[in-house]
Amino acid sequence: MTTRSSSKDRLRASNNALRFLRSVNRLVGPENANLAKAFQFNCSDRSLRRSGGWRRNDDDEESPDEDGLVDEISTEIATTGSLFSRAEDFWHAVGWAFNCSLVYPKRWERWKLWLGLMLDVLEEDWRAREDAAHAEVARGDEGEAVDAPMANSIISKYLQLGSSRYGGARRVVRAIFADAGQSSLREFKEVFHNETIERREGNNGMKKMQDIQINIDEDIYGDYLCSDESDGDGDGSIVAGDPSRTQEHNSPILKPKKTSEKKAGARNEIDSVDGFDLLGGVEAFTLRQRLLALLSDVSANLPTHFTPLDSLYNTYSEHIRPLPLPTFALVLSPTLLPSTFTPSARSSLIQLILLSLISTSAPLPPESANDELDQDILQTCFLPYPANTNNATDNAKVSLLVEALLRLLAHHIGLDGTPELKEAVERGIAAREAKTAKPDRRSRGGSKGDAEKARFWMGMSAIRLRAVVEDAG
Image 1 (tube, rainbow, N blue to C red):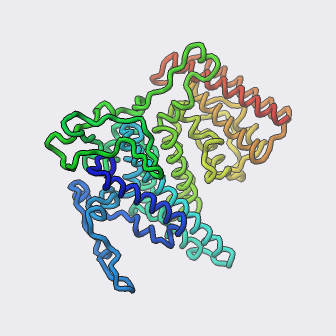
Image 2: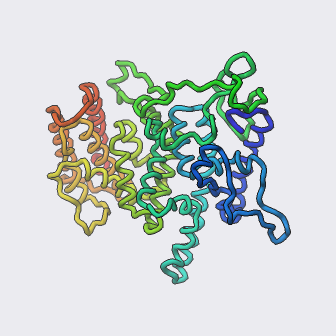
Image 3: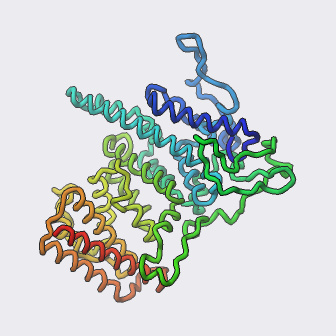
């Protein structure tokens, strides 16, 4: 209905449906519109998914409503052609969408619209049910009566992945961090049969991609309108996409910006845009962040329904820690984390990652702190210490993490520019510089150039650390 649409009318129907659902979500709301039922994934049989078949569940049989009307629609679009029949579940679609953001940009143009709509619905539905739960608390209710509204949310149902709750949580996070690597493409395969294969325009070769952004509201569809009336899979009507697009995480289709040697000394050699590109671009980065924030909120409120928050953050850490420095810095930047990611949640996640990287000589925060951060803990347990290795990248990441905590504390609570704070910052900067003065023989891979870039990141972080303390007086 989109990339390989056989007519203008079919594509327009898809875009009109998107407009309609946006309006329904905004004006009626997910619960009143019963979007939980409309957005229910039906295909639970793997053989049916492989063959593109569709089967109605026994408890989903057509039944007249009180007015004698039948709600179910039996057209191809609503059954075999429906995304909710084709995808294994929501997280399969999420993982495939983010894979497309890296290696199939034409498909990503469509998938990002769907994923943006789904997140709007999921967030609105969760907020409404969270408010209902707070109302239950205000009335003096507790236990299941309080959890029930949130447990019935659409996102909660999507997270119910069978009895293997913890294994399910790890798969969910893998979908959010899908990087178009071999393992990611194996786990999160295309949803629609041959959806990445591009249609030819008659006998004149493949239709040329245009530099036109899609804008559904303005009826701007880029190059998605095709004159070919056939949806067939053969007879030379389509051409496979460039197989070189299926690449590993470290060589995405979106190439980094080039920086002249003269400019490199004035700013970071790795532009922040490169960090976005490694996650599929700015729009993909934002959608990933929104999903991470939503899962954090669900886990904090429904630990027994999904997974405990500390377990979720450990899984986040496994995916965030290995990221290249530009991407690592973006993912944990206090200014780029969504507003729904509360300061407390941000602090907890950053502390968890930091504790896995920081020197073993650093004292642990007191258990009574329960991940709460104050200036004394920051300058005693985090600021003065390097990483637990001589690796320049690890030390740069430690610097970025302590910087993020310092900025969080300064913004939300305030800092007292004491001599002790300034001394802790300077000790940490010196310790990390000294730690990276000698090469780390235990580190694997990397190059001298990588170490120099990491030291550049560390030096820029040191400048910002001193600036924050200076602003505190």
